[in-house]
Image (cartoon, rainbow, N blue to C red; front, side, top):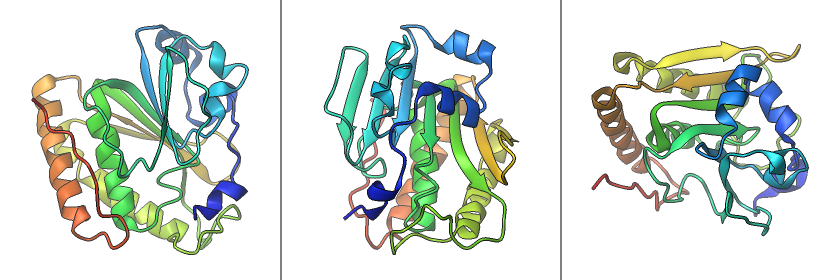
Length: 226
């Protein structure tokens, strides 16, 4: 049972995504067109909120229990992002707000989340995740699933993963959108197609290596390029 579903806000509107993922007004205006594809990781019922549903971009929402409401520009997928087959080099941005890596089962989950997100992005695309915490608390108050690893371990695994990106001209930024010690992580993958391809190959290597370490997740699907 996914216990955290009962203890998690699942109806955040677009305003909260913009604020906590540190999306500027100019960035949002550029994104908000029918040519943009956004991947939500654990978006819950957010895509059907009043302001969210008025946006122009195409949304794919992968969640354990999404709304059944779908339109031409809203695709709902019921499942686990870590095991779900996702189209590579397709999305302009990946947004993860209070989902992964926050609710990671183990450090392998953290690595697979980041690697699959990067694979999903087009060259020059953005991954935005919130929160990444840098405090000494063992648990967030919203956590209640027994298998979740502590916040410092998630942060450590995140920083270890980001160090693997240094050779690939990846831009990494941390912002502090509120007064708490919670940061938004913004990763921009390279625009250069050859560099993005080399980065993708590295991500596939990471996923394959981490799958061997997984005890509870066993069917990670990787889409190979044609």
